[in-house]
Image 1 (spheres, rainbow, N blue to C red):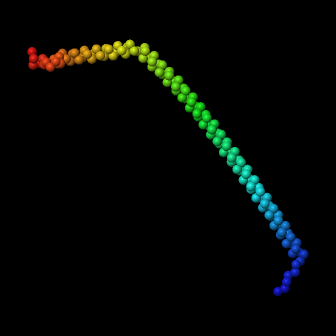
Image 2 (cartoon, rainbow, N blue to C red):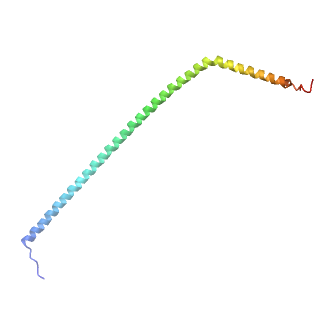
Image 3 (cartoon, rainbow, N blue to C red):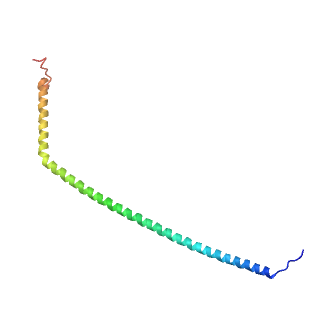
Length: 131
C-alpha cells in the first residue's frame, strides 16, 4: 500500500472541521448556560405565581371570615329583637292567658262535678241500686 501524502487541502479541511467543532462546543456551552438561566427564571416565576395564589386565597378567606362575622352579628341582633318581642307579647297577654287557664280549670271542675252527678257522685254509691 502506498502512503497517502498530506496535501495543503487536507490541512485546511482538518482545520475547518476543528473550527466547526470548536464553534459547536461554544454554542453548546452557551445553550447550557441559557437553559440554566431559563430554569432559574421559570422557577422564579413559579414562586411568584404561587405566592400570588397564596395571597389571593388569604384575601378570600379574610373576606369570608368578615362576612361570617357580620352575619353572626346580624343574627344576634335579630335574635335579641325576637326575644324582646316575645317578652313584650308575654307581658301584654299574661293576664289573658292566666284568665284562660283559670277558666279552663273551672270548666274542668264543672265538668267533673257534672260527671259525678250523672254517675252517682263518685262515692261508691250507685243511684240505680241504692235508693
